[in-house]
Image 1 (cartoon, rainbow, N blue to C red):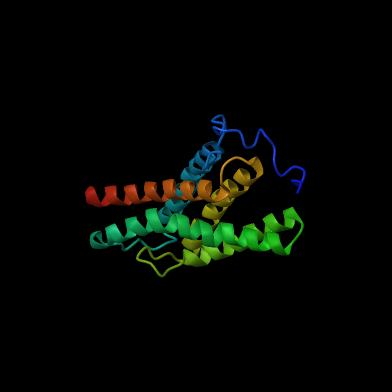
Image 2 (tube, rainbow, N blue to C red; image 1 turned 90 degrees about the vertical axis):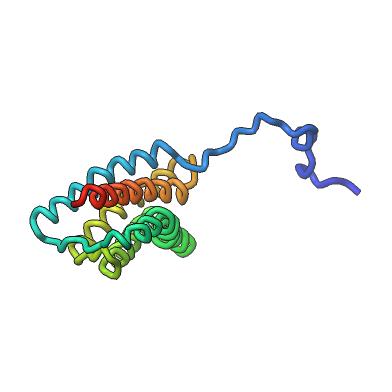
Length: 185
């Protein structure tokens, strides 16, 4: 009995195993932090403008609800929203459509629509359509940018890079909200 060609090579089965294996990083830190920095400018900047112009109602989050909000925003939302709104639409569309440009365009539009709907009302941080559109579109722009750039770089996981960027941003917002409660604002 002969071994099929290419199935066994001496170098692949050397003992002890080679220790010079270079592992791909789980997160593309450069892209993750770049998208986080862009979102830190776009998100609060637009949000403050909407509040200054009195186009959105004030948030009605109570101090008793703060721990639940922080857990949801920092532990649940980044992974859940990245999976539902970025990873899933992209991979479903990628299986259905052969053109990468159309896949990315439809992924962006699908994600933007879902993200805006998800961020409208229903929570203690009630958002009218204008605020939900701002949160949803800036989030989509930055997080889809992170997902796209990480995918194109072939370095790091687009899912985990985007989820971590989302975690950083939501953690920053949770800290600012906690600080405003602590300062009595």
